[in-house]
Image (cartoon, rainbow, N blue to C red):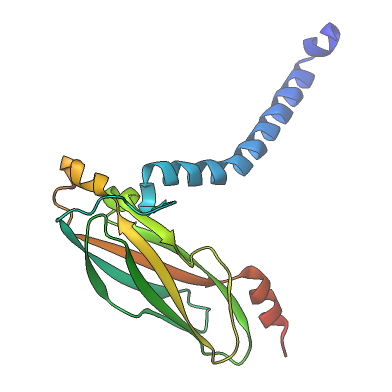
Length: 187
């Protein structure tokens, strides 16, 4: 074994191989670690998924704006039922979004979300949401999708968030990859 390590070419090949394996492992771990980081810190507008109601309702109010987007290649109409809602911090609120498949074939989509401003995103807590859940709509079908949420009372304890009076909840729908391939193959 000692003789094997004395050959410079063998050392370089082993170090390159080890580095390549480590890089592949890091690539697979990057997405779950980044998602975990975003959920813990609220970075990138990631909200908190709550297990129960806030417990305390404060007098301070915030206005929640609702935004809806679709990817260019998804033939759906998607919009919030209400454009805004004023809620007291800690108060549980229910909002709805509507999606309609305007194509002539079934399509499955999935929504991602974020909250702005980013510095307050981790205080926006969802109890129920349609995000990251595949939604299959038949041609011409419309569906209303609920979002049950509250703004965490801990927001009021952060002096750096005293200027927060408006939050924007934004969803973007994408066609799932399985459907994109099958719709491309359709005659």
